[in-house]
Image (spheres, rainbow, N blue to C red):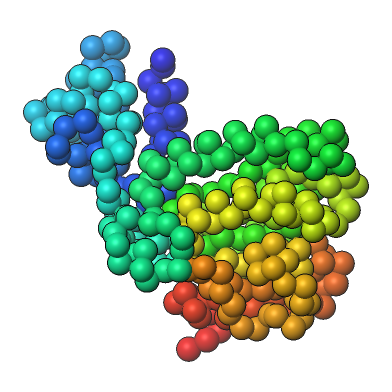
Length: 317
Ligand code: URA
């Protein structure tokens, strides 16, 4: 692999780790690499020092390769070992943003289990990833909704860090999502992005998912039986993430999460609860595109969420 290809791939991995809250890299040995950024530099040097004469340059630039070679032979001898995160790692550091990631806490601690009203103890990062992979395979194999399955192109599992503090919960994939397999990428998704930016939330720091994993034909409203068919999937996702907050975008999300047929207008403006999470209800971005006057109400709702999380609301003291 060329040096620049390796670097790009590593930086992508590093950025993914950061979003997932990993700031140190466990190795197969008792000691871990204290900083994920250091991991990148360390491996860049060790990958290339024998191959293409870059080692000297790097050694002169920072001397990182030599220092680390003595500190942690495991990563140097085999770069792949640095990437494997052993299941025995029961805690992980969380990136410092208090806004969109969980505060550092021992994963699986009994106190977590008791404090939140989740059904199961929280999982470590590796177990979350494995649970999502298995669940996604089940979603892709699901053929329960006869009217939908023969027309879908892709299932849309969800996107974002499995350690997110906030879950954005929508209705169902539309045409763009059905084509790409990603949630909220069409016009409604673009408005959602703008709302997130205005609220100082980053799209890649929240988890985005829907009540349905497949697009209903012609974007029709999902029926209750379809929501129930998807329930085991989205409930498992929520149980795995165990977010602090869930935002229900629109009435179908409310139906799925809160099992309520009450209108968004009546439910918005206060927090509800789903297991260990606080639930906020607001208008669906597609509704806001059709009814721009309601945008100010959604902005009020987002400000309520921001205040709750501790994000400074623009214009407030
Ligand atoms: N795209 C989604 O993924 N979900 C919605 O609810 C709407 C558009």
